[in-house]
Length: 110
Image (cartoon, rainbow, N blue to C red):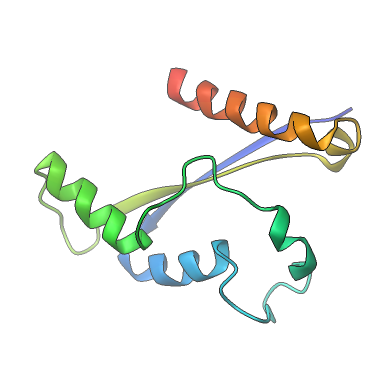
């Protein structure tokens, strides 16, 4: 049986640069996670692509909301949307986009 998987993680300031480097596959090697297959990076895509760096996007959103923040504030919630491998084996590449678009709509609705 296939499963949809969503993971949410609160992130603070000190983590954001390394998260961006990891998520955007800016590194050439991942010693801490040898399961990452860099040959598959070309298949990664954003549902909502950041225009600027993660820090710049966060600063812009905090400023536009008129918020003040503490040094230890949560600055972003990292969201991973995926599914169990058997799910992706059962759908076409064209159906991937529909799956992720529906998952994003679910998050917005809920």
